[in-house]
Length: 168
Image 1 (tube, helix red, strand yellow):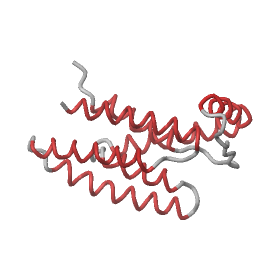
Image 2: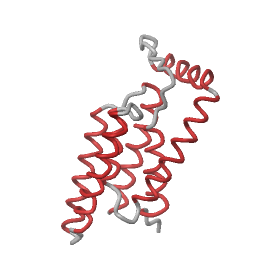
Image 3: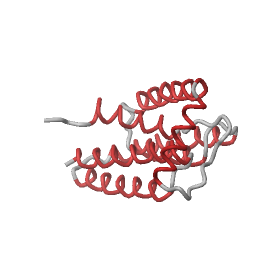
């Protein structure tokens, strides 16, 4: 049953990554869906007798909230990315949080290097995709911004596939 929640999280993470790549925004509706999924997951785990999971998640999330707030204050992370980071931290336990943060940082660095190296092509790809979706969409062209939601999604998916999913 846990795997259903994890698969749902993977689907939401992929949607958020694509949305962040295309629009440089993470919609609050998607974050609310992710939070609702966590509430359902935490309720399920509580009734399975795993109370510790919930407390660890709250403590880890508060730490990620502080980090996200500091990065947002120094304009190193967008507000949507900071909220997404906090929600992602809810799903991690004390064993997986270091791996999640490490993979997210590595993926973020790789995306930033790729973006800065191939910015013209990256932006052209965004424009082509957005024009295929909706010709009326005004394409937002940020200056030297990196859609860090993609890196957070990579971190989530990595932890879920490597540590949490029980494939049988």
